[in-house]
Image (tube, rainbow over all chains, first blue to last red; front, side, top):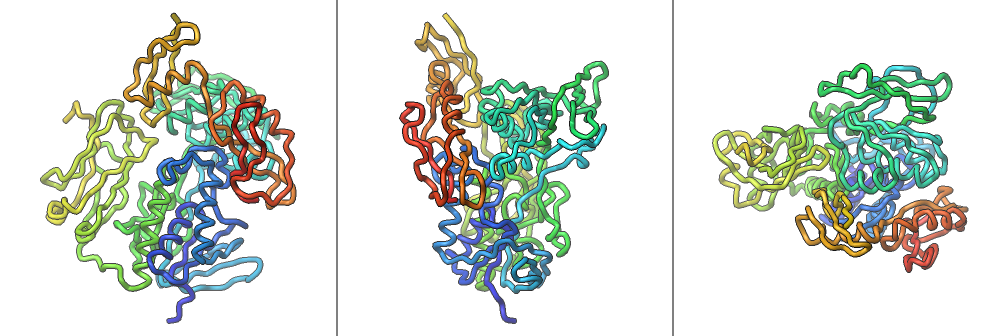
Length: 426
Length: 118
């Protein structure tokens, strides 16, 4: 079969750009990135705040600058871009069906594919807020695109539901643009975003944060006029008598992100019920050989630097697969989420891969543990590695590295488990 | 003696700092677990600084706004003044990432840089 490309990457965000660059460097001759927007960069283009690249470049960059460094490198390497083009379908045989205004409906064949579609925000129907359905309810990311890229203000007086990073960052951004942010409500008893965003986005600009609070009702006929906020108990049930009407014209939702996998689902790629993303091995390869996945499409990351790293790995694997040099798996062992762990990525690994290179396991803790903790990888019968930290929080991804020195232990294991627990419980 | 409380943002740990001040003089920083935290507390209690990122009006580009940022941290107290200056900026594309949009904004010694090509 004649292939149009060695590696085709779907999505020109940070994961896709890093995948394409690494695929090219690892020996893939013809590499293509397909992007539905009119320019590459992805959501980074609307994240105009600083804080990107501290790990990758040892610099504090705004999102668009972080993206552009990768875009410039990709162009210099001779990677092809197909912009303003939507992938409609992919097949297990790695044929892509695409649509664009210029070329109509057409197909391409790739030796390897990298899925890098990123994630989507949860919307109002997904969290079921009762009340009326007026205009003025937006996701935080939509508001971010309007304010930072398109030049529209979505409102004047805001309430933000959810203490995710985008919500907190928008609280600051809207304040800088002259709007008033009345309150950030968080249903959980802890912050869901990063501490530095709480300090620099809420505290700095006197935006109050109310933990264990949510929106009971949206009020307004044509446009939002107010929301009714209410305290909740530990089971997220409303506490009667704590209701408070907050006048506002806009409600922003920052209530979580979900990997964007419509294409993967349609192709029959195996997805994890917990992450919402494809089940992958140590090369970020899905259950279909030659189809890889990287970044927020697999699971939602906290920092873009780690997304770029994941892109590197998936792109590397894709290039080797395209050239026929990717090692065939000998054995596949399952990596399980153990104590206090919501999920682990990769979900499967081939112990043979550990012979030459380290494998990093990434996970999220279920509940905050604000004391010294162990992150431990074990088999059914023995501990393989553990490292300590001063805390574990759901907002921050945790990684544990398996190194070639652990090869024998991992090879013996039937399955692996990753546990997180307080040292005081050990 | 005055005491101020901060949450340290030098790393993700988020230590709760107490800074003791005599006038504008830092006497003691408590609650930090590293040198960076101690420096952060002292700076935060005397002249807190932040990076600033915002947009300016742009003409002739793919988008009507150009994202910009400060080349270094600027005093928090000068934020509003800087924003007021940037609201008046009106630039014409093309612009290159890193181009200096304004030099030495509000006498801070800090430049305003373009965050991307446009």
